[in-house]
Length: 337
Length: 221
Ligand SMILES: Nc1ncnc2c1ncn2[C@@H]1O[C@H](COP(=O)(O)OP(=O)(O)O)[C@@H](O)[C@H]1O
Ligand SMILES: [Mg+2]
Image 1 (cartoon, chains in turn orange, yellow):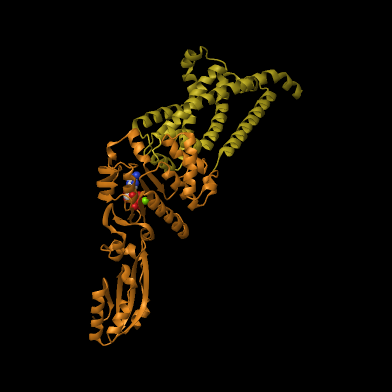
Image 2: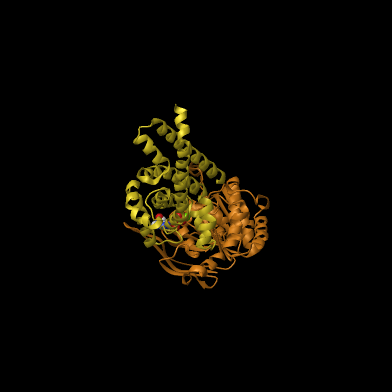
């Protein structure tokens, strides 16, 4: 649905040359939700804005739904933009217009006539759950409601793609959840491809099928969100994963452990299998679970446990061997192995 | 005695007042017709905006700065040939309103530009992302969003024009300024002087009040 080829964006100012996006290539499939994570200044917004040519790349190619957008200008480009919705962290609603008129504006931009606009706006407002707010002004709405209005506006012309620039970053956790589930619903029911950029790994965990991690204008790692969570390669990715899967044990607890500390990571359904109890039954060791958590990455379970294994060293080693055969990832944190 | 001289003055005061209103009215109208589009042009051709155009921006900006840097009284004299050509006279309120208009255009244009700048750039960008045409963005986003600023800018322009019109009065432009100069300055008539001052104060207050009221009424923020 979206193909970016060697996108480069350089900002030339009098005193310096800033590279916003550094030769990024990316393919986003039809119907998927794609996340781009990175710290502030990584170039996420710039990259996203290249997709609808709000920012014209210095070089590279932007293909959306088979159309080479950089070849377009004027009216043709505006028409292409009508099939790419966009929402922002700051909502950017027109404060002097009612909720109704804010949404109607997008339809006006596409030349939809007045009577048709009315029906479509009401339909959109009920899709985002704001049918009763049509005549209010943005100043009278909460952050979550404002974002819903901007989603309605972005969807007005039946876009194929929805671009989200930190769409939940200004919202509290529970509002974030509700906006994310609205986006998920839009993706599933309307089949709209969604690109979402964020600095919150929670967002990726909740809704992204695949994701990329950005740093200094480059994509340092990308893949299926589940794989990224289960097996991050780059240190930056690991840092981001930690914000969701943090497994710090209290130092005192670690000191007082006499046995061997191992960290086990289970994937998918394995989390439900009785690996640990099998291991304990078949070896003459004792086990203590010190920490454990099952996270659901886009509804697929990923289990992480930290346990202490106590017993004779050869038997402990055998037990660890056994685990290594049945569990994807076993890491000895402390103790001889 | 005081009252008597005011009553004597009334017909002339009345006419001077009407002349001032005419001059200011014409100036405002021209500011609205030419200064408003010029201000919008200055805004939309700015860096990062949807009609970014370095050349247009700097040429228009330079003309605006040029006119604004000339003190009004000098502009008035400088424009006399132009005024003569345009309205075939260099005295009276109509003649004065030519130079008032020329001064009002860039004055209001700058106010329009700066009130448009107050709009969050993101709002404009969201409209660009929606695929809206430049004209639709100007008409449907910039105007309504800048409306309170545009109205209070018109108030400021009107008040400045009253001040300028008094200056125009000193070189035969008519209006309240003319009256004040003729009676107050050349004849040392304090009564006329005070009366004109009071009329001006009341007029300015009234315009300010009205402008604030309308600006507030249209503000939805
Ligand atoms: N208009 C601009 N002019 C100059 N530099 C810019 C501009 N926009 C972005 N940048 C620079 O590009 C880099 C990436 O910015 P951005 O895409 O906004 O990052 P992110 O969205 O990941 O926080 C930053 O270093 C930023 O300073
Ligand atoms: Mg950003």
